[in-house]
Length: 545
Image 1 (cartoon, rainbow, N blue to C red):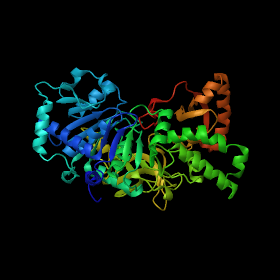
Image 2: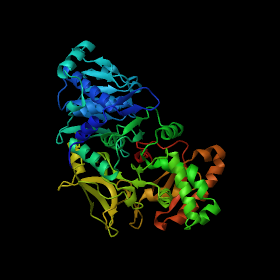
Image 3: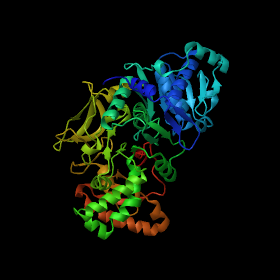
Image 4: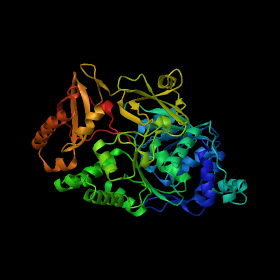
């Protein structure tokens, strides 16, 4: 690891002082790198006047926006600890996490603030709005400085104003930097403790795997409170001099498509669900046509067809795409194969919040199908107790790995082996080149009647490709495998429930011809509502049996 990530930001600020750094897409809020530096320093002054000290916790909860990024950077560069809380949590849970984290302050979005009970926040020094940084509430016996007092203190600290030559933000590599509360897909939230070096190494990995020149653009659509979005759509690109546009509203397909067309990003970071929907709606109907499928793999006309499909898809993402990165869950193999056939700049990474988040990843030109890439810089991966197929629990060690779970020693001890390797809870294997292949979650693996290991995710990949299936999960009931299916929107609108039931019976027969006999699915059950999901769009499996 060369240096801390804020040192990269210092260099970018000095060279791109007047260039735009952060914008709220379709709104007026925007900061140049110089304005970002000044806003961070003004928040430092505010923290100081309120008695905030290095190591104090400052909670951050709200929708993606430029001010979320400003508050985050001001906190970590002051030496305080960011407590990032997903806005998707219920108000009661947010309040509990603010207390559990021992936060002294809270930056909050207007939608969340309306739901919170103010009396539950009595112990906080202050609550600030992410809309405009106004004080929404102050603690008992806490005097909020006036604008005049704040400006006087700021001028005394910076008598020559804020100029590029004087910018020197830093963060202690060995100090706690972030506590990230994440729901995951298997249970209750836990506060993942991450040091500065975890963030720095992740940023450096991004620079190494996805190099980019300053002045590029990016649309931030993943939740910033989740480490995937926080690092890959915010810290890494900003430290490279990228102008980041934040989608402040729920990124519906129409909003997202419009933003991509206007911004023309060099990078799209997303979860498989997004590209799978695009594939199912726009690509599959085309390449399924008999004449297209007949010529698809041919050298001459097939190459022309594949180039046209690639151009159309690239244009849908703005036309200047250099990297398309998927993470958070496994991508459907059929979709993956199509993207690789057309030489789309795809790479699938593997990570988790406990690694801030990167464990493995590879540049698109080196990506191996069905893998999660090779271990990233300063990270090691090994397989614990592999079976005859080489499959076992994936263990990791290195710079990215968390310190532990905040105020939860029992969970922390359970997360690590005696010799210091962290248990991911995922099952997989490594090939000869150290590419990581994930078979499924340790907790979701089903032991077959004859002792075979059954991975529901592999069955779901095939089930999701069948007609009318929007999304699915496979569960075990009384020794039998049952497929739970939520039909896609087109099927729901076009067919009656009786017709959909007939379609699923046909799908069941087709599915069982595609999978080994020991993993045969006994029945398909139709759900009338979408599955509940985490912010990274993984189905909350623990809710379904």
